[in-house]
Length: 477
Image 1: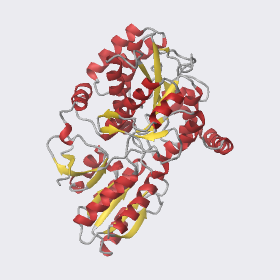
Image 2 (image 1 turned 45 degrees about the vertical axis):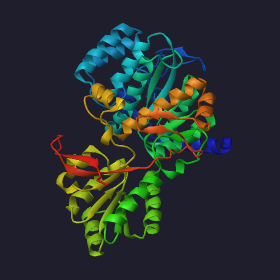
Image 3 (image 1 turned 30 degrees about the vertical axis):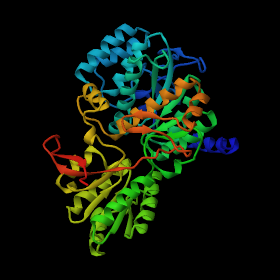
Image 4 (image 1 turned 180 degrees about the vertical axis):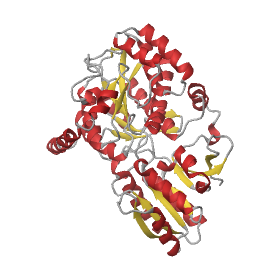
């Protein structure tokens, strides 16, 4: 484990900063605050046992950001039946909750929060093992729901096939706003509850890095399905990920550029305030120079003076053959501005955060032929068991975030089968030869906690299969 005095100093500083932000978060906490189950150590705990916290918990405490169903977290309007279900769960009326959630899902089948609530409600008062999924359900709803769909699908599959050695799996949803300070506080709340035996999350690399110090001290395993920064490698014995690191993304994009651009003279756009974006930029820079290309200029889209039109104009004047968008989710708007003002004049490449429906919707024709690196895409796997089940549950195909979260959940469940304790889970994940067959292939971790898996390249093409008129499809060999 990391040195405790360093961790204490870090947590102290973060908690002070979090306190200053507390007033601004009051309204959000009151609207989306949940509670967490209590007590029982490593042994299975009674399903859906509330702590007694209410929607008016003073100050929106970190514990109030975590729920097994007695609060709603996802920032979207709730149907009357979903609200009824939560009230029933608060009262311990599982039968009513199940009926209400089933009715809600008939009309809202792609609601993963409701699916997790239903999975939990079906456990009733039985003993259960509990894991958490930490995601920005109040601030980045679409990618958070993509993560939740993977967790919900895996949880349903596990419980419908006998659970973990006969014990069902309960899932707590944790709302972290993809904010490092908030995530640290939420991670501490999870760590302080002995029922939580593992965590799927967090979403962004900065958030995962901040939370990792807490999990390291608590001996609690974290498997991120979406954090790709190379800084997460070897950060703690308890930190793993089912998504490949930025090194794989950078290599795939670089090789594509030097093969398809003549010459590979590139201009890079990044977010200097994002650890993920900085990591990907650094790895890409190393890869492109190694492969024989060059970077003519870099633009930090987080700079208050950044202007997409000016940047693209300068790139053209400098003789660039391609623009490389290595921005993160919070700066998607700036990336979209670059796509729009470029008007297909220069080739476009993007990191995995650009695999987003908003690129299809807002980018439209200007995004056609843009190539994006992703960890996984349905491709030729549309008839796999995972894909077919996903289609039945959610009413359509799912993306890499859902598949990676599904695999992270299956992996935690497999580790729990070895020994259902925090230490047992970490030991299992670290064991040489430990592997799980998931939706995205075999999940097996390197000693660094990384997954050894190549990235895939997709491109934006016109399509009548989506409401946007465009879709991502695999790049032809």
